[in-house]
Amino acid sequence: MQPRIAVLSGLLAIVSALWLFQGLGGNWRFVLDLRLGKLAALLLVAASVGMATILFQTVAQNRILTPAIMGFDALYLLIQSVMIASLGTVGFAGLPTGLKFAAEAAVMAGVAVALFGAMLGQARGDSIGRTILTGVVLGILFRSGATLVTRMLDPNEYSIVQQVSFANFSRPVTETTAWAAMVALPAMAAALWLAPRLDVLALGRDSAISLGLGHRRMVLFTLALVAVLTAVSTALVGPVALFGLIIAGFAHSILPDARHLRLLIAAALIAAVLLVGGQWAFERVLGLKATLSVVIEFLGGVFFLTLLLRGKVR
Figure 1 (cartoon, rainbow, N blue to C red):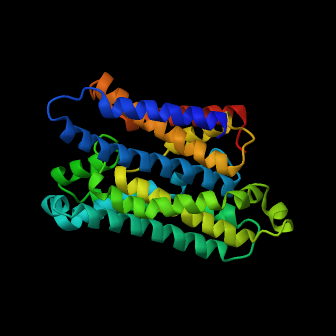
Figure 2 (figure 1 turned 180 degrees about the vertical axis):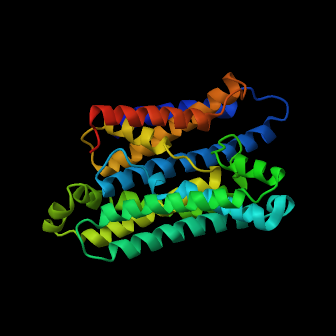
Figure 3 (figure 1 turned 45 degrees about the vertical axis):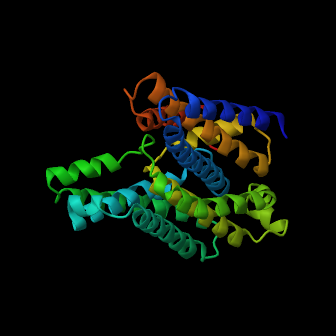
């Protein structure tokens, strides 16, 4: 195993042990079962976000972009707003968690795959740029639609929309973790299997085609994996716009010349260490006096500006 990968694995084992075993008392079996379910959800979200960001940056040939630029968070907010407006507070709260997760993930992944397929179906060299630009415009459209819907809600319903507008790492829907894993784990395995081809894809369109890679087919399949992983993580905890940017930045810094197999694994491990360790610190050290998602978005914004100022956009 690569030494740095081994170090990250050790760090993850340490923070996971802290998460699971600190403060156990009383009915420890019950508490441990709850923590195991929550830990599994956090690990799944972390790996999904980390791998999706690396895959998207490889396709986009740009290290300051994340899948959030394609409007996933705005679409998620629109879905929540429409469901609350249609079903009301009681009906929304009474939705089966499995059905709600499946619907959200299916809509987000379906819209993304339809967008990618339509835009990349045109054999032009600038198709990636146009696809990303279209995603940005659709994100604005989705957010505007969500704003329009929320203006018609009563204060109680609007407060629920506000709650789901931010990622909630403290209470992931552990009941849907098994369903999410059935979707996300095959996508992760496919990404690792495609790692050698991703190395070729990262060389650029002309170089990849000259080396015999089916560029458009590879790009479409990679973006489909991005859509699935992003939809799963968003449906589990809510929108996380800039977390992936931090993860990818650390992964490229730790393994600057690594190929995609190690890079994807490192991104998943870094994301898990940051998410589990950060949530442990916020819950057990700070006593839930702050919100991890807000801190992540702030640090992600600072990291984004740092990359721009240093000119590291590729």
